[in-house]
Image (cartoon, helix red, strand yellow):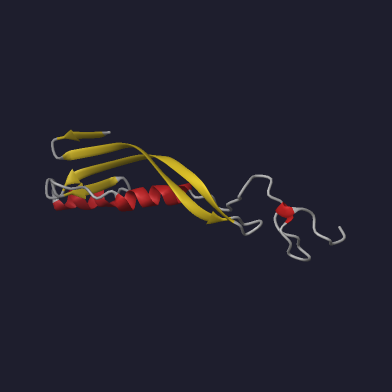
Length: 114
């Protein structure tokens, strides 16, 4: 949803993407669907004093536009990166690899003695 009030613009909605990851337990590749809420605020460059613009640039949420176009790519990318799991698993109950022989325990038990 895009709302405009004078030179200020607010963008609210959600972003989603499918990412290709590797399981930290079994090292298999898998795809994961990410989605997150997204909000961005932008003001037209030059509409405020330079001191006020500098203060607004330090704010993580404020961006600037040229009156015709607002580039949200970097903000969307950062939002999705924050949604990535720290230790991705192909499934919650993934048994991983055998610590002795390295066999994939998803395929069944290995021949190692427990």
